[in-house]
Image (cartoon, rainbow, N blue to C red; front, top):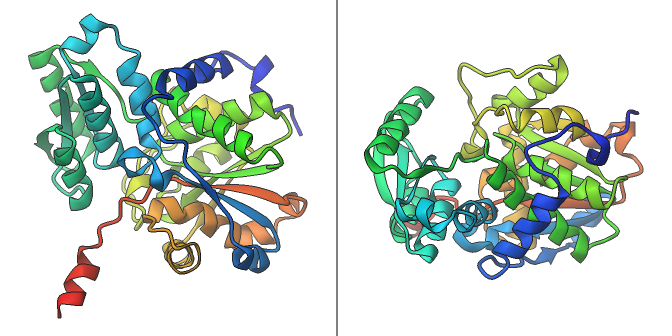
Length: 333
């Protein structure tokens, strides 16, 4: 196997220095999220599983790490005009909250089909919502219009060096909490989280393996990895609304070079993993956040000899912003 340490690799959008700097910068603002374990899930999988609960992060997801790094690394002149992004979910809320903490405007372009619970979070944190159509062209055109009108700073949801470095703080924290981890399972979508995590993890523990988990209905990263070039899907079909984005030009080289493998799972496997999280871990998790456990439970992982010696597995529960309206409505009947 080729050396997958980032230390001698080409220059990426982030490195251990930028991640360590981000960790110091955002420490006053973020939660150090807990790590949970379950003897029941250990017995089911035959592994020692360690769950990094980013569902308990401010804003309900890991996204607050990157958003905080982006917001608090702006100089005063840049910050004075605010920030703008386009997002249908957790990044939108995270950026709104980070901007609120710094006391600057956040202009959030949101597609009309975004989950209500995530839109409510943006409102709760004071973000100024600008609606757009549910396609990438409309998102980008609307964001560019807001940029021209406001002079705000664009903070992309994942294809941004500040975001990647901020998300990478998760791996430094996780390996400090559980130094014996030999494998990390991380959700993949646009690649901001796993890019930061893999650089941070392999910089401080070169032998650690980092595996991406992806829905089969949005498997652009798996296809990209297999073909050696970015593949963009015409459409996606998955319950995991946070995992429908495509890799960016900053995240793709990192995923291509450093991520050890990508495991794809069906939506029914994600739902089953969610059920385990609710019933056994007692943690409310969104579909995107449960996919790491789904990957470990999958035949693709269990029957692959490459992972037979993975003993201490870190699973990132990336977010807990699930729309529970159906549950609440059912209780009223």
